[in-house]
Length: 275
Ligand code: HPA
Image (cartoon, rainbow, N blue to C red; front, side, top):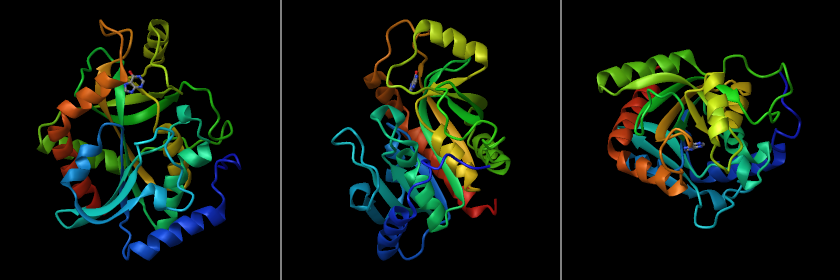
């Protein structure tokens, strides 16, 4: 399996970013979590050790929107060490796949083995409602953009052992975690009514504008990957009113506490389990 050559970030850029991080952090944890938009509250649950601003990391792609600067937080949950990443880049910001997946390639260089990708997503499956959590078992590339050449994509990029841990934590905490398929769209527009019909017919449970490029590059780099969507809305076309970004963020904000509690327990178990 080989990616397109322009997906892999230039080695000297990755090396400079790595060098900067290693000058600030002594022991790099082997587990990282990416906090989806509106899901940054989880970072408050961490005991921070070193917090880096992404803009200070050489070559780290900067967000298109000013005021949305990201951070890389090296911290712990009950003495279990992890990295939390805020401020991923999206295709709709005009970023290349090399930029979107830069942090994944950097984490891999730093020795990270387990990566949890979270995102805010629209619920396609009528059984889902805002606030629900979905464990991703597969994805649909609705963008038709080629992250990897045809026939070369990882067959099953999600880790079964991490999914098993997620299910057991959900059962322990009595959190409803259903399994589902994530449909990746380019954004920035939400789906039309007609697109919602098609995407449902394709078998997607949730829809969003992130995660898949990182998933594919991470799988190529042999990372164990878990994907979790927080349903922030009924997909446009299912709900009664037009969807706005503010609505998506408001729902994420409303359920931030139970969500963060689940994520803390999940990350702790992933870090301490020999997956
Ligand atoms: N569609 C696409 N992306 C999203 C949505 C949605 O309904 N909600 C949050 N991200």
